[in-house]
Image 1 (cartoon, rainbow, N blue to C red):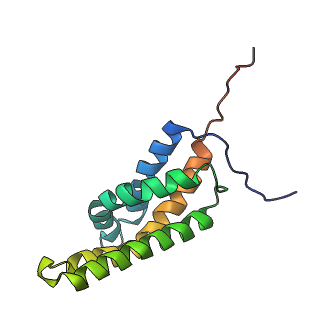
Image 2 (image 1 turned 90 degrees about the horizontal axis):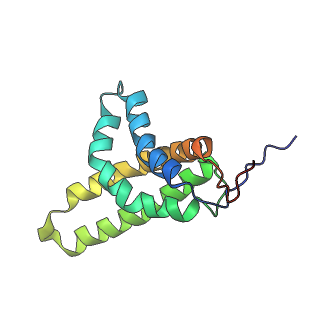
Length: 136
């Protein structure tokens, strides 16, 4: 018996949007006891997750097998690129006071992989294969 997880050839938009929204909310609900850090991460990092994470996850969902650890690694890489961009911006434009943005982006290195890994698990669970010709 193989433990191979296949990739889906089609995108299920309902499962995608549902998993995209439910993943950070689920992490916040399960981890709110940790001094409310996941709840603040949801509030502060949610818009960045939707702006940066949604296109990355959309590009991956039909090309990469839905394994939580793979999605978490790609999310960590994407967030690392974002941290680098924000840090360079903060260094080049000190009058912009972007140090707080660097702080939030670094915290994203913790939550982006968790959210993307949970997204992969939820999407795999909720995905419905497209049927062009229904069976009678």
